[in-house]
Length: 318
Ligand SMILES: Cc1cc2nc3c(=O)[nH]c(=O)nc-3n(C[C@H](O)[C@H](O)[C@H](O)COP(=O)(O)O)c2cc1C
Image 1 (cartoon, rainbow, N blue to C red):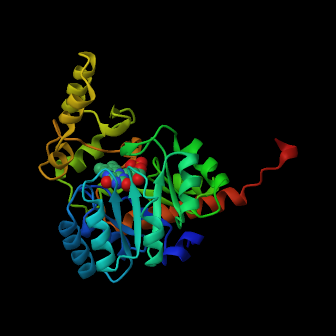
Image 2 (image 1 turned 90 degrees about the vertical axis):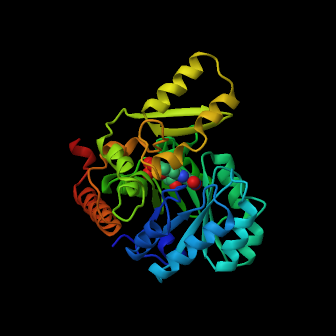
């Protein structure tokens, strides 16, 4: 078994978090991941507090194991989502797309573990100072909103800069990659793209098939207002490129993106929907239960780490 400091902190069996993906990470997926020994996370996205409450209640009905909620800081409902999290007794939150600093002391007081996503060393240090329990260093290979640095470059820098446990996110879909990030000093991983193709994930079949069909160079980075989003190439990204060529401003680009993730996840619109997915989409080979995904990845990571430690790197023979 792969057990790390993170497993103790969160009382989970495997050091695997499922990314709190807006629209995609509903109670069904989060509960399945938690049941399998990872930490499932409900993605609050832009949903109002009461919608998030219903998801939390549903997840409680599906698992007795701990699960978390991702608070998305670009949402207009952040305050009410946090209120619901407290009322429903959720023990872990991850945060994305913003700085949760002002909420951390209050959440900690209530005994909630807070794990912000960071994309720079400066933010990592600030989050540690504010009281975060762990950090997710997210590289720009990931699906959805991204930073500028790759996981390979960012992760060891964050590990060196803080004392709290660090997880990696972005670019991990199999056991070799899990072994690699553990070697870089991570205590665990957060995966998003691979879990889109979990059986329990409610994403539309068309979305899942688009991920399964993706090849290595099929993702595209859109961006406006300093925010970057990684998606699979389709008609929507062509339209984005056309607008850029014509000199469109941030507002026009932002309008193009409105409602597109929902269109992809719920309606299965693979042409004009926003098919958020990471560069590892090409490594996702099949739709399978969350438990199988977790067992496959941890099993392979253990094998890789054992093989590497057994094979002798004898300096004098090299
Ligand atoms: C469809 C999709 C939606 C996402 N939505 C969110 C979100 O609402 N909040 C957040 O913090 N991260 C979000 N993410 C990022 C994931 O939580 C996770 O960190 C990322 O997918 C990990 O990288 P990977 O895609 O290479 O596995 C999203 C990712 C995807 C693919």
